[in-house]
Image 1 (cartoon, one colour):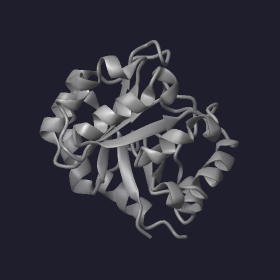
Image 2 (cartoon, rainbow, N blue to C red):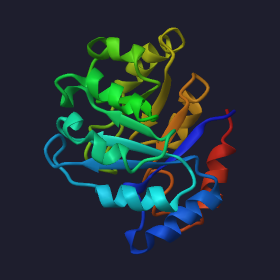
Image 3 (cartoon, one colour):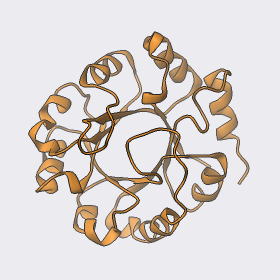
Length: 220
């Protein structure tokens, strides 16, 4: 079964970021997930614009940029001008007065538009944007920190979105507390990709190639 694996780079070893990027690419990672936090939309700071620029220049695989910032439209060009065509940019609809305007800027720049849906955000409140975006990132934990516990009620939201994705032409992605059992349960149902952090990928004292191969060989 084919599914995408994205490395959550806020969990990487920043003592040698170039080595991390190369090891993940050699291991077969599909894309690099970049979490940008402003300390306001979420109560934390994570990766910076400079981190994004460095990884964009170093990596050959696509970037998957998750903007957890207030009013992203005010700063969207800072990010877009440092990305490559075909990279993905997610925004949180609640963070913007007119999210469709920000999504159109992403489309106009040649990027893939996406929205991220928090555990407390209902599908009904983002219905119209589902017709604009190509990717929907479903947060299974509250955004802002790595290593949180999975919130079980998110599974019902995923089931609802899976029933809509073909009609509205978007793909679903999982972010947060991504364990092997979540992949084996939701990949067969149609979830396209999974963001890997400390639960499965980072801090395991084993080569990324070995870890990623084991994930791809999970039994369904």
